[in-house]
Length: 189
Image 1 (cartoon, rainbow, N blue to C red):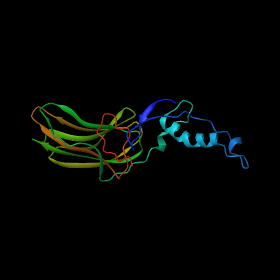
Image 2: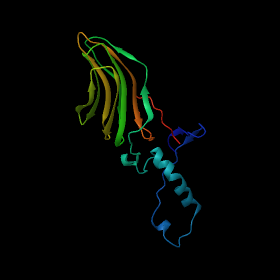
Image 3: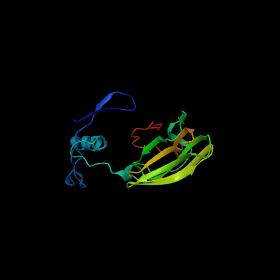
Image 4: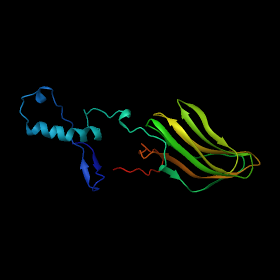
């Protein structure tokens, strides 16, 4: 038995079982069904999910594909004031899933010298997905791949300022993973 983790259903600690190899011969037609084999068949999925030594690893395609929607999965709603001559990243999310996520934010601008934007970093290259310089709520459906980072930012000049609030990542109901440095609102059922 390896690592200990908490079961979401009752909050009690559970030890990750060892992974037990099941040979083809053991599952051939006509072979007896033995208790030891049944135990390995029951515990191996837990060993795989828990990352036990020798267990096959879960691959990225096993994570659910995300779609843009109205279910908020990560957010910072509090307003952040951005002063003159600043470039501020208000919120970001590092993705390990594939699909499309809805990104939205509310911006107030003192003048046209405050620019709000949503940017995607992929393979080291940054792309602006939406950019604006007037007050309002803005939304973009952003295609993401494993390794992408989506950033919500505001840049101001010497005579500009503003604020960002209601920064949100939304899906069609799918959970977001891993939520590195982000607040999550997933439903684990």
